[in-house]
Amino acid sequence: MAKRDHQPTLLEHAGGRGGLSGSASVPLAERMRPRTLEDVLGQRALLGPGRFLRRAIETDRLPSLILWGPPGSGKTTLAHVVAQATRRRFVPFSAVLGGVAELREIVKQAKEDRKYRGVSTVLFVDEIHRFNKGQQDAFLPHLEDGTITLIGATTENPSFAVNAAVLSRCKVFRLEPLEERELVQLLERALEDREAGLGRHELEATPEALQAIARSARGDARRALGLLETVSQLHEGPLLDLASVEQASEDRTLLYDKSGEEHYNVVSALIKSMRGSDPDAAIYWLMRMLEAGDDPLFVLRRLMIFASEDVGNADPRALQVAVSADAAFRRMGMPEGIYPIAHACLYLASCPKSGAVGAAWHAARDAVRRHGALPVPKKLRNAVTSLMRSEGYGAGYQYAHDFEGNFVPGETYLPDVLAGRRFYQPTTQGLEKAIGERLARLRGQGHGGAPGMDPAPDRTQPPAESAGPEAPAPTGPGPAPEAATPEPPAATDEGRGEPRG
Image 1 (cartoon, rainbow, N blue to C red):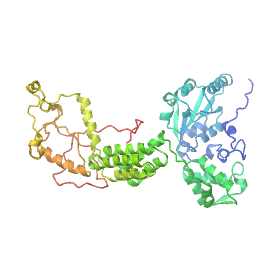
Image 2: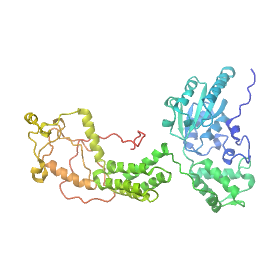
Image 3: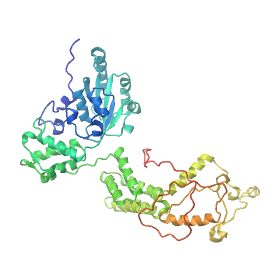
Image 4: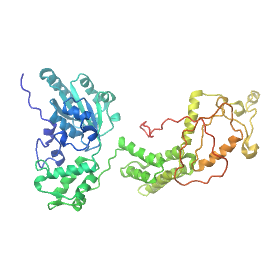
C-alpha cells in the first residue's frame, strides 16, 4: 500500500506554533495557539480532568460535535488541539470561503481514505452557521455512514443556526468567554514566550496594563493578544504601562447581534430587571441595547407591552408614560429621544407591579377554549325588535345606573356555566389594592356569587409589595377573596417564540 502524502494540519495552515513560529507576518494570536490540552486556558467545565470532551480528545474517540461560543473563546483552538492529537485525517473547512462543491471533493477523498487506507476523516467547519439549512443537509449521509466526523464551530445559538437533523447527530459544547484572570495569564505567557510570543523583545508590562487589556478584551482571547501586539508595536521602551495601553486601545464594538441570540438575551435582561423593580439594572441593559445600535422603536414597543403585562392596574399611568415616550421619541429623534426612553424605563422599573391583567385574559381565553361559544344570557341580549322581546331578549335586565352606587346587588353577567368564576384577581400593589378593595365590597353584596364555585388559590399575586411610586388607596375591607385563576402560559419574546420568563 502506497504511503499517503502528508496532510497539513490546521495548525500548519494557520502558521501556528508548530508552523511559522514567530513570523512577523502571522498575528500574535495565531502564533500563540495552544498545541496541547495543557496549554489551553479556561473552559474548565469542558476540559477539566475527567470531563467527557477531554477524555474524547485524549483517547481519539471524538464524536461529531458543535462548539458554540462567543468570538475568542477557544473554538478554533480546540480544533487545533484535535489536529495535533488525532490519528485521523484532519481537514479544515470554512463555511465563509468554501461551498458545497468543495465539500463534495473532501467527502470523496474521505471515502477513498476510509476504503483503501483505513483512515477516517475529521472535518472542521468554521462558521458552520454560514451554511443555510439546505447546504447543511449535505453533511447528513456522511455523518450517518461514518465517512466523516464533524466538528462545527459557531458563534450563533445552534438551536437556530444549525439544521435540526445535523444537530441531532452532534453533541453540543458551550464555550464561555475567558475570565480576566485567564486573559492576564495568557498575556503573561505571550510576553515570556521567546519562540512564538514577544519574549525575544524583552518586554515587561505592569499588572495594571495587563488588567486593562484583559478588561478591554471582554473575554476574547484573540482580541486581548491583538491589543497586546498593537501596544508593543506602538510603545517605545521596554515597559508597557497603563498609559501606553490607553493610548493604543480604542472603543470596541459591543458584542451584540440584533438578529441573534445576544439580542434576545439583553432584551430578556431588560424586561426581567424592570419586572424585578431594579431601575439601575434596567437602565444599564437599556443603554446596552441602544449603544449597540438597536432600533429605539423596538425598545419602546417592549416598554409599552411591559406597561400592561407587568404593571397593569397597579399603576395605570405606566401605559400612559410608555405611550408618551413613544410619541415623544418620534418627534425628537436621536440623540435627544433617549431622554423619554430612559424616563419610561426608569418609571416602569420603579413603579408597583402586577401580572393580574395577563392572568385575567389568559384565564378568560382558557374558559372560552374549554367551553366554546356559550350562549349569551337572554337578559343581556339586545332586544331591538318585538320578535326578540317576545323571545325573552332583555327580560330581567336591571339598569345599573338606577341603583345606588351604580351597582346591582346579586346580579350576574357571565354565562350560567361560568357563574361565580373570577378571572381578574387584583393584587395588593399600588392602585390595584384600591381596585381589589372596591371589588371585595361589591362581591360582598352578592355580585356574581354562586354556590359550589369555590375559587382556587391565586398563583399570580406577588409575595411582597414592589418598590416604587404608589397611588393612594381608599380604606375599606380587605382584599378580594382568592379566585380560580389558572396559571397563564409563558409569554414570548418578539419574533422568537422563546419564553421570556
